[in-house]
Length: 370
Ligand SMILES: *[C@@H]1O[C@H](CO)[C@@H](O)[C@H](O)[C@H]1NC(C)=O
Ligand SMILES: *[C@@H]1O[C@H](CO)[C@@H](O)[C@H](O)[C@H]1NC(C)=O
Ligand SMILES: *[C@@H]1O[C@H](CO)[C@@H](O)[C@H](O)[C@H]1NC(C)=O
Ligand SMILES: *[C@@H]1O[C@H](CO)[C@@H](O)[C@H](O)[C@H]1NC(C)=O
Ligand SMILES: *[C@@H]1O[C@H](CO)[C@@H](O)[C@H](O)[C@H]1NC(C)=O
Ligand SMILES: *[C@@H]1O[C@H](CO)[C@@H](O)[C@H](O)[C@H]1NC(C)=O
Ligand SMILES: *[C@@H]1O[C@H](CO)[C@@H](O)[C@H](O)[C@H]1NC(C)=O
Ligand SMILES: *[C@@H]1O[C@H](CO)[C@@H](O)[C@H](O)[C@H]1NC(C)=O
Ligand SMILES: *[C@@H]1O[C@H](CO)[C@@H](O)[C@H](O)[C@H]1NC(C)=O
Ligand SMILES: *[C@@H]1O[C@H](CO)[C@@H](O)[C@H](O)[C@H]1NC(C)=O
Ligand SMILES: *[C@@H]1O[C@H](CO)[C@@H](O)[C@H](O)[C@H]1NC(C)=O
Ligand SMILES: *[C@@H]1O[C@H](CO)[C@@H](O)[C@H](O)[C@H]1NC(C)=O
Image 1 (cartoon, rainbow, N blue to C red):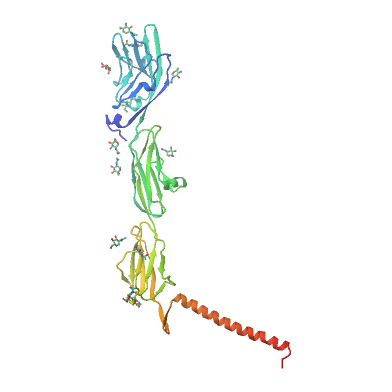
Image 2 (image 1 turned 135 degrees about the horizontal axis):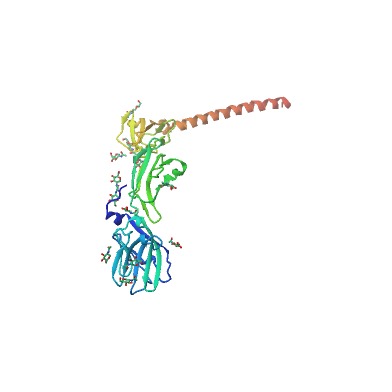
């Protein structure tokens, strides 16, 4: 990627960190606290313990005071400056011997040596400058925001706006799949691709990190659509073989529930005619003959267009009168009653057989009373 033209380069892309590798002379020191990073991308490297008076300060690139590596030198008595072969026009030296570098660049990183000459004395100090790229917010894109579980392959792409050394990391609780192989990571770590499972809806993001900087992209919300796989029905009174029987005038509730993402839309039909409701339930406060019929609930996932349906048959429970009392027979109780009647009959027959069987031996064994 092309770097933006200066002055954007040093204003936005650079971060300087200085590590001092060594101080050689006993008195002369180059310390980190004596180096300032200015806001406009300039650097001033202060020194401590230098002699005063008639002094020659000479700065070099690299470790050592080789003439061919000279940047600039200053003679305080003649107040003259001499540029060396390594000078790029951005290096200068103050009258205190401080090195200044304007419009910092990455390749200004490295070792610098200062030689200080005064009558009868020569001292050398060496230090190191490290310049890092300030990481910018990466841009995150996704191939599709609304995806169907098991069906759509998703690709996230991280777009860094940096050129230096950094690592790309991916975040999102469902990206633990990177380790399990659900996600394929490109060799430069910039894209991840995978099929998603239900419940993997959530925020995803990428981040850049270097030794001195960390930046995250905005979170991107992925919607994973799934279902419905089944409808679960409940009713009051309880249904039996899809059939709900209730007394005229009683309260009836029919309900269908289907789990999906996004949530299902519900429709109800009575005998094939759509009812004006979109609830998952039908509530009848006072059952009348006009309410009976076949109810069909239809659950549709508006995201996946998957449609499921189920039915209830609503009937009026039969009532019959004995004297002044009225009884209601529900299908369930009819069965229980039949079983009850059946058990009663069995008991009677069993009793009769026992009576017959137990009577005979008694009749044979003992003498007949007169
Ligand atoms: C500079 O060179 C000297 C001698 O060659 C060496 O002892 C010293 O460790 C070097 N300093 C750095 C920072 O490389
Ligand atoms: C500084 O320059 C003056 C005049 O050229 C010279 O006499 C003096 O020796 C120089 N000082 C050093 C430390 O080189
Ligand atoms: C300071 O000393 C260095 C090394 O001897 C020399 O190359 C340079 O010209 C001198 N600088 C000045 C301003 O006299
Ligand atoms: C270095 O700084 C001095 C004083 O600020 C200035 O006069 C001189 O022109 C500068 N030299 C270079 C090479 O920038
Ligand atoms: C340092 O980097 C700048 C800009 O990136 C380039 O113009 C220059 O040639 C480089 N200098 C060296 C010594 O590599
Ligand atoms: C991020 O990516 C989107 C989609 O490609 C694009 O519209 C937007 O301009 C990008 N933003 C930056 C800062 O690159
Ligand atoms: C990269 O960053 C620069 C500086 O912040 C910005 O001006 C530029 O729009 C960014 N480019 C992209 C593609 O994000
Ligand atoms: C990709 O990420 C892995 C794990 O974080 C890392 O070990 C590897 O160096 C990265 N590769 C690149 C090219 O960034
Ligand atoms: C149910 O409706 C019937 C006929 O419309 C009415 O006579 C009765 O009072 C209603 N019962 C209740 C509890 O609302
Ligand atoms: C259900 O119907 C109501 C009123 O007609 C409407 O405001 C609502 O958005 C509908 N809900 C769904 C999930 O369709
Ligand atoms: C039926 O569903 C609606 C909306 O989902 C709810 O407000 C109402 O309480 C439900 N009725 C019953 C009896 O469950
Ligand atoms: C629905 O159909 C059943 C059976 O044909 C019928 O008994 C019932 O009256 C019908 N209900 C409605 C509301 O049309």
